[in-house]
Length: 174
Image (tube, rainbow, N blue to C red; front, side):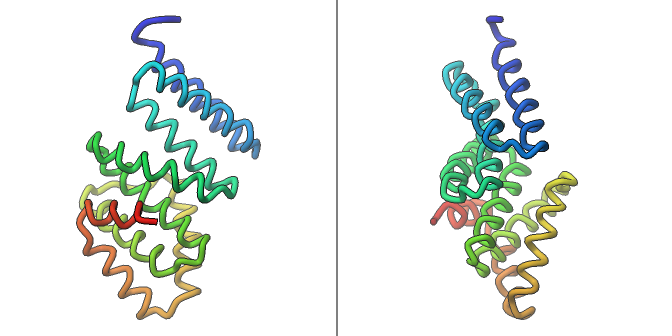
């Protein structure tokens, strides 16, 4: 297969195969497929599809416990989504940075990032996918358990007050 349909085929095949691998717990296979897909799309110079796969790569790295690797990829993808005007995807990336901050016990940081993502989603009227909501609820519940309610509310509000550029700069700052 050659021609303009090639990037669509590469992205679709890699995405589906990686999602199946993740769903069955084969994170190594998912990582391999996503890395190969990203490289093929880089060579084809199709930035949007590469960003889709890179986002999935970051999610898989995070789920496999490679928080540093995930953060590195998220630092690129959040800027790519911003450049593409995909603010819903930016909100998701902010949440992913918050998941990492929660896992690293950076509770105030996680809370601010969740607040920023929530405000952005409200502005866009953008709802989470069910699997996103499930993970989000687990992390927010952990934050509520680990912090005093007043401290959590203050940090959440500080996040909500961030403009988009400030929230992104904060997310990628570590």
